[in-house]
Each structure stands twice: as structure tokens, then as C-alpha cells.
Amino acid sequence: MKTSAETLENNFAKVSVTLDADQVSQAFKKEYKEIAGKYNFPGFRRGKAPRAVINSMWGAEAIAAQVTENLVNENHAVAVDECNLFPIGAPKFDDKQPILAQDGKELSFSFEIELKPHFELSSYDPVTIEVPAEKVSDDAVQHEIDSIVAMYSTYEEASSATKAKEGMSLDLEVKATDDKKKPVAALSSDTRSYVLGSNTLTEAFDKALVGLKKGEKASVEIAINEDSKAPFDQFIGKTKKIVLDVKVKAIKKKQEPQLTDEFVSKNFGHKNEAELREFILKMLQEQHEQMLPQIRDNRMLDALAARLEGELPESMIASYKEQIYKNLFTQLQQQGATLDQYMQAQGITSAQLHDDVAEQAQERLRQDLALDAWAAHNKFTVSDEDVSAEFDKSAVENPRAFEAAWRREGKLHMVREGVLRQKAVASVEESLLTVEEPKKKSAAKKAKASEKTETKDTKAADSSKSSAKKSSSKAEKADKAQESDKAEKAPAKKAATKKASAKKDDTKNSDTKAAPKKTAAKSSATRSK
Image 1 (cartoon, one colour):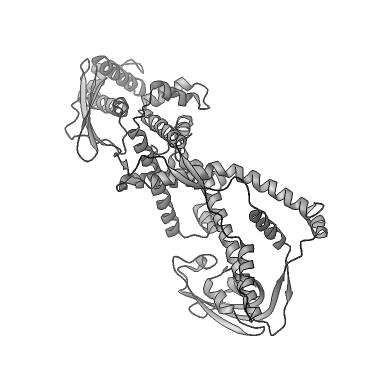
Image 2 (image 1 turned 60 degrees about the vertical axis):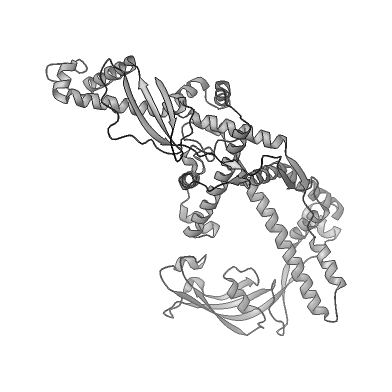
């Protein structure tokens, strides 16, 4: 097979292919043999009908058309690979192309194909990122202890003069009705415990309860629309609103236990508070050390992606989204769950899921294209040995046969793309500059600062202090969750060639799997370390 590629406008290329006469003859031989073995021809045993008889019944031109189609389908992707191109779309054939194949003669055809566009970075200087300190701070240990101790908190009923505040537990009588004033049993209850400030129902509901005393009432109207979250999502399309009439039956204040050696020994199995702190420090340090590499890699890729110049191609974004959805559906199927169950568990609507997938697709695509730009700028190349090495890393029994199959299917460009991205990742890491991120002001320090500014209104100051502490705690939790979430997503982001080669045919995978959309498989995925 002879191939050549001509660069066209708008990231397209024209690929020309010429198949030798022997390859064409073998294709005709195979087609006639399959037809003879599949159908009965009068006067001939199955598989023994001569070409003249087959032509008389099927038509020589029909046979030639099928052979031509087979040859084009089997070789156009291989031709793209041989021209060392990175396609992001399906081939486009001229209506007049190709002419019908003729037994014993060469067959030539051409097609146009869209290629991955080339991007530049605003800078190719070493990347600089902030990373967490290598050692877990005393504040982190204290935060963890506070969280654990809080789990042993109890609620004690307050006096009837007490006003409901965030953090208190309320016993509520709830009567729910729809827009036709019909009772909604699923949301109604004679006695329901509710922690104020949890926003379990809606923020408006919580705000309406603040300041109420025992015996007082409130009415809250909840609009029902396609963005409604649990537990109101079950009423979408059934009513326009839900009205909650609430009566406070009791107000309970949270009572947190004192962290004493006796409390520690009784509930945690450690001799004293010092031993508990040592244990938690060790546990947090181990977790921290496991997460640090992923946090560093995520921030490194984000920083590099921020340098990418130009608009992301819509076709590639769509491809990445498609792959993300494919991976999600595959995971849900393996877990025996449905998409509706997943969204309900996550507390999101279909619109929110769509937005999240779109965001992930653009994030991954931007990172992949940034790595491509880095690789091109540094003139990285991929040898046949590099490609074979990726297949050697796969878990298949016969890597060479696996590689040959991918070569026949014209999918080796996916592996080359993955190798280039691996080399880019290694290069960026080699020159990476890191600085320790600034420490955040701890909740304890904030509380202390609050104490210093305390005025006559002690109660108000205490309340502010409590609020500041809670806000700080929430912020720390959010940061921690964000880093943890990134760490979980990272593998997919980095996915790569390893997956591509190891993957058996799934076209790429999440990032390699079929990866987030990667144009289908082909895409970003292919970067891994």
C-alpha cells in the first residue's frame, strides 16, 4: 500500500491511497469464496460455484462494488496511521471516489479527514505551582479531633424562651400541601427532627425557622421546577409548589462532650488524649502523603492548561463529552444502577449533570491539547519501539498479536498520541517549580481573634465566634473535599497510553478508556505516566 497526505485548509488533510494489484486480487478471491460458501448454487456443491456462475446471479459489477467497499473500509484508517496523522473525525469521500476495483489491477482512492488542530501555549517556561506542606499541621489534627468528638454530641431540650439558631435540633410538626391544597403525605410528619442550618430541605426553609420559639409556627412555599432537588424532585411535573406549614414542638441545644483521657479511653480505645493525637497525626500523614502526588499532578496540568491559547474545537468537546457519558454508563451498568439513581444519590438534575460533564470535557481537552503543544514545541517523537513498549505493558497474553490487530484497524495513532503526552508530562514534571501554599488561618486562631475583640455584648460575641468557627470548619472541609475529589478524578484525567494499549478495543479509555469523550476514544486519553 502506498500512501500520501496533502495539507488542506481548516485542519483538513487529503489522504491518497494506492493498493497493489496482489492485495486487490486477494480481496476478490476472498469475496467469491465467501459467497460460494454462504449460498447454494444449482448444480454445484456449497463452496464450489465458479466465478462465472456467481457473476451471472449476482452481477460482476456488484461483486466489484463490494470488494471496493471492503478494501476502502479496511485500509483508510491504516493509511491515516501510515501518514502519521491524528484524526478527530470520520473520513469524507468524494461521491465519485473510488472507482470500482478490478481484479489484478491497482486500486487508488482518496479522502479528506479532519485533523486535531495545533495549539500554542502562551509560555513554555517551567511551570510553577503551589503545593500543600509535606507535614500535616497541628490545626488539621485538631480539626479531625473536633470532628470525631462532635459525633458523640447530644441534644438537650432548651427552655421555652429559647430562640432557634443554627446548629440547634428542632422537633417539628410538618403539614405539606400541593398547589391544589391537597396533603402531601411524603413530606408531612407529626414529629420530625431537623438540625437548623443543614439546609436539608431548602435554604428558605431554614431561614424561616431561625428565631422561632417553642410553639410558634411558620409557613414556607417551595417552587417545584426541573431544577428541584431531593426530596422535592419527586414532585416535578405533578405540582407547581409545595407549602410546608411548620410548628416548633421542641428546641434542643447541642452538647459536645469534653475531650478527657477518660472519654478517649472509653470511646476510642486509646489510653489518653496524647495517644489519640499521635494516632490521628499518623493516619492523616499517611493519607496526605498518598494524595500529594495527585494534587501536584492536577495542579501542574491545570497550570499548563491555563497557558493554552485559542478556542477549543466544538467537535472535540462533543467527543470528550460522549466518552465521559460512555464511561459513566459503563460504571453504572457494572454496579447495577441507573442514571436516575445516580443523579438522585448525587442530588443533581439532568441539566446539572450535563453542565458538569461539559465542564469536565473542556477541562480534560484543554489539558490534553496543552500537553500536545508542549510535546510539539519540544519536538518529541514516537518510535516503533515506543509503541511496542506500550503494548508490552498491557496485560494481554500476546502483546505482539495485540499490536498487529491495532495496526490492522488503524488505531496506532491513539497509542502514539498517548506516548507523546506521557513524554510531555515527564518533561513538565522534570522542570516543575513548586512553592508551599500559604497556610490558612485556623478556626482556633479565628476564635482567639474574636475573643480579643469581644465587647460588652458577650452573647453576641459568642455567637459570632461560633459562626466564624463553623464557617472556617466548613471551608476546611470544602477544601479537603475538593482536593480529595481531584485526586479521585486524576487517573481519568491522566489516563493514557497505558490504558490505550492495555484496553482491548474499547477505543481508548476514559481518558483512555473511551475516555471522556475523547473524540471518541481517541483522545486525550492517552496520556499517562
